[in-house]
Length: 376
View (spheres, rainbow, N blue to C red):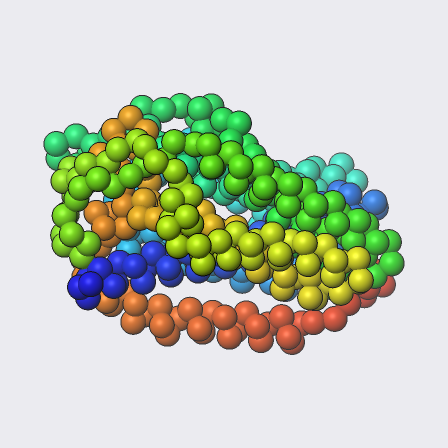
């Protein structure tokens, strides 16, 4: 395998790492927003829940920035095609993400119950919608996206917004939301006490059970979907475009797992993480449950990536113009420079995130929130 092909595969793996970081860290915060109105039955309880993630939610957005930046720089054709085709979805995601910082910063600025209630709903929407979109995006990859390229590699999207909300994509979106709720709930178990703790524990058990069912349903559904097979293309690591390959709409998305049985350990990790997480919640081991939830995300996203490889954005109307790891990546020089920066900054992000969580550990109590004028 050439150096270029190694770099392309390395960035495919790094993109998976960044998506997992996004799902775990940002998904945790969004999970808290989604369940805010349930775990908090009055104003002070909701403030406690918000302050449980208050020191971290804005710092966790770095995973969102890193993920978007990695796609832009490492796989520019994916970035251009997805953003032009999914324009309405991207705007929906953008506006819901904008509401999150506004909700955190402005909710408690006025004492009005109506004002605070409105921002509580804003936090609910801005927590639930992005995670559903995140999961639905993976679902649509398995179905193929209706786009094609003109002779000058200008992408043309022929689908509609409502078509993206097909039943399979909705199942994937609900799986993403359930796992987000689980991570948010166990985070609140780590950081709160009494009634909020008990409500979060109840939701964590429900979310873990729902995620197991939805993951199994999604896997069964995928096994019956028509896959895409790369019939012919320039060799991996050779500069190429989507107009130089032949792709057949045939085969199974589980082909890699059947050919290499060891890969079944990836979806097993997803199921095991969720099941063990449920048991940890039962035993009041919330910190362990958080780490098990992170392992579950690795298993779920890893399963999707393994099944799709080498496809990154399959085309449902022109399969031979599908985008793959080989034809959608940047140049060898770009990938090399990016890898150097990633080897420096990704460990740095992991270090300061871990340090921040360690320094600001402990329980959040209602009396402390009420007495602190700087609290959310």
